[in-house]
Length: 123
Image (cartoon, rainbow, N blue to C red; front, side, top):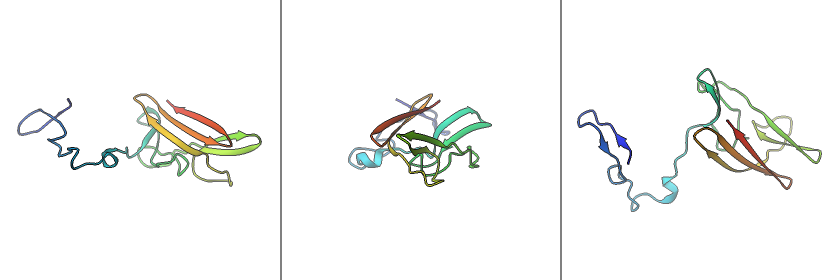
C-alpha cells in the first residue's frame, strides 16, 4: 500500500477510505486519471517532447517549458498520405487514434486509416 507523508504525524498508509474514494462516491468513469501530458521523447530535462493533447494529431508536441518541440508523423498508404502525429497542415488527414498506453519506459499509440493499423512507440 502506498505511503503518504504528513508533516505533523509522519508516514501513514493510504487507502480508498483515507482519500474519500470509496466505490459509493466515485464511479468508474470518474476514477480514470489523465496525465497533463504524455511523454514522447524524454532523453534529458533539456531534450524532451511531450504531447499535451488527448489525440496525438490535435497539436504539436512540446517541451516541459510549453515551447513547441514539433514532431510530425506521416504515413503513405496506397498513394495517400495520413498524419499520425502533429497538428493539421498541408491538408493531410489525421489517422484515427485507437489507443494510447503509457508504460514506465515507453509510450505506445495505435492508429488506423485506410484499413491499416499503425503501432507507434516512443522511447
